[in-house]
Image 1 (cartoon, chains in turn orange, brown):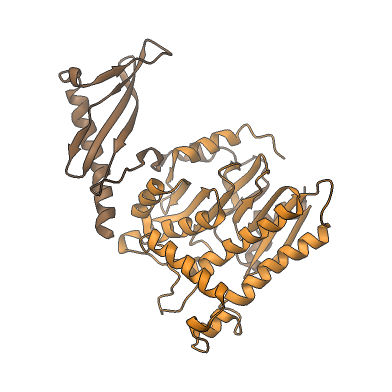
Image 2: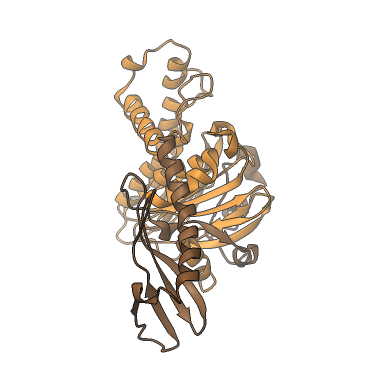
Length: 256
Length: 134
């Protein structure tokens, strides 16, 4: 079963297999997942004039008067800013709070609980190029796009236990929420892919490495249990040992 | 905060320096190293160097020797100036393009890339996958 829908300015692709006994129908699961993304979008989109975050951005709503969810997500984003030493930030240059860098991952994570609770097998969610697969999903292969030619794949790696999430960041299409942290970090990495246990960590750290450059890459790989593949603007690659191992294993994948 | 990161970077640089010194000194300073035999092959052995204090923390490395050449160098212990252990084993190292571009024909379930717009999705590989189904 594949189901796709448009939200948050991008497209979400989902895939799963129905198991027995069914606790939900395909259409109910599809509708629930779509609603998860729609709800996050209605609250956090800066493209929707009446979203809660848009009202905060134009001063019509004070942050302290905002919903608990808004303050909780903002607090979470600030914790990531501290943890990444500023490489990830929930603020635009003009000071406006922009939670775009974390909200999509939160929606992916929430939609994952929909699949887990429905008891479906081999599920995965791909929102705009960021992928999460289920706790029991096995041999799930994800191709990584070549930033120089988006009709080609650079490679394929297999997600699984301990590496259920993969996020890729870059400036190829929509680098609107990524700012270089230091002048030396500008444009070093054309694309950064991070594999992690959870999608929020993968997404935030991929964004942070693009913004922070090689210094942030070394910092991230020393402090987090993640695997990383980077492509710099000259087309050279760097990879953690775990990522290289995942590449090798993909050669023997028999998943179709 | 910035200072901490600089220290870590310098610590990495100092590892290289220590390694070079250690390699040159290996023949004359053999007693200070503790050979631990590798069971698999008599031609291959792992030697762990002694811990060296540097201005940036303590560093200890191990080398695996196959025949007359060093086949692997790994950091056993490394701390930065703040005393924090640095997991150099997870370091993202340069990798040859050919090693990455190896599985373009692999069948994939999903495609990961930098965020695409709804319009760009239409011409994306993910869109092709979704249309093929399966």
